[in-house]
Length: 334
Image (tube, rainbow, N blue to C red; front, side, top):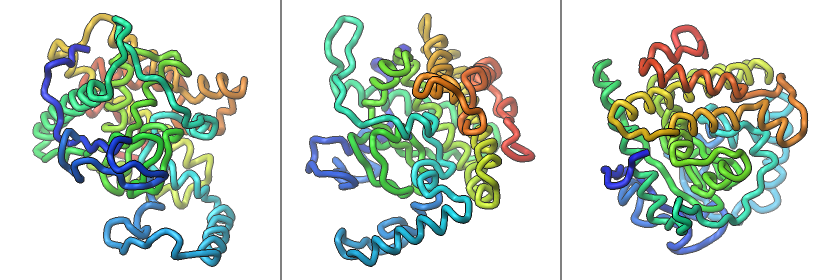
């Protein structure tokens, strides 16, 4: 992808190590929120420290708080709700199916290397992310304008190891994710190394696909798909919720393909870029990940779509560039 020297988004929040330091969930933001160069859902809304609630200091709850949390866990389980799904999924959507979320471990990874063998700097990675985010902003502003609407730009938070979002706490093992509670995409760029080394999906456009997919979830949030999904899933069985989740994820893949369509029209794609994105979509299908991690597949547990489905929907968006072609029938009208 021809990204060097292009305009970078101002909607980057870099909270990676290098600021005040700190452990799990510490703010550690450099430059404040919304400024600088700028793997979710219901549980984060209404939590202490979220939008509209007082922030409680750690240690204030004690043993009684632990008992309440344990009781709440089992009450939710008895109602057919997986609290872990609410924390890491919740309709916001991480790029990688939950099988990977359960098996991955946040281990330190070496910095990515360029074709010449030089180590890619953290600043260079930030520039790449900023350019890709800016290109998504350009594309979606144009599409929304044609529909007579304004496109509210999301923020993208770069973090390392762990982060606290409006959707709860997450670690690098969660993978990139979008949180509808604060309209932000969360990305630990070490995931790009995971994508390359564990999923055999390398290349800058494979990485760009990751960002475009999560921005696709933001588009879903704006047009009402995610809010309705989060509302409906409470009354669904796990099997029904998984099927609806698949359609949500495939639509985000299609939206990523729409972005790739217009990026190609600008002449920014290079030879092999499309293949990189299609390969990434293939490698992170539910079936591919289950085969890789456990040696067999359980279709009933799929929640993101098969390799063929993910590749097909990304390509549909790429080929047509039309929002109407991304109707995965999450529910009637979408």
